[in-house]
Length: 169
Ligand SMILES: [Fe+2]
Image (tube, rainbow, N blue to C red; front, side, top):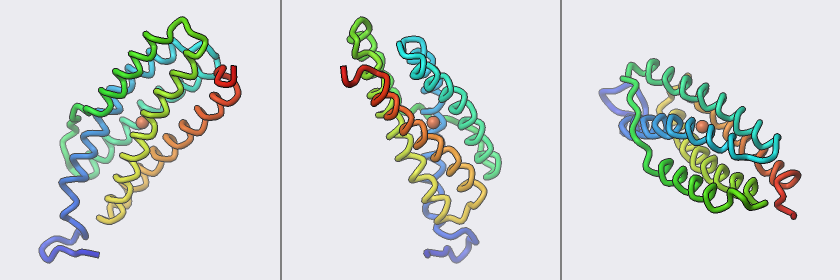
């Protein structure tokens, strides 16, 4: 493990990248809060509506967890606009417009939501790795809680797709 001579923190060359990625995912989560509200409104299956609403609550918690990390590290709580999330949410909007009166609407919503979850899983996965390499144990613990929630949401969406969302229709 690379240790900086003047700095007790191992792998301190990752610090700037870690902070930048934290700001990106904070922006992404804030953007997603609004997107999930719309997706919950449009979902037909009650199970899917509930999944979106529950994930909205979790997203708000995830934002709080990120703020906690900024505070732990004495950083200002600043979000960066996440271009990837904006693109994914634009696609979700587009799919809602195209499939609003189609019986595949729920399946389309699930596909859009899973693309979003996979982006988040990749982001949190990298953040956990950086936190681990820099030995930010508290931050790592918080990020792991969120990563587990994102994976669980993705799994739930797959279950709903298989059981409810007319995917097999
Ligand atoms: Fe999230």
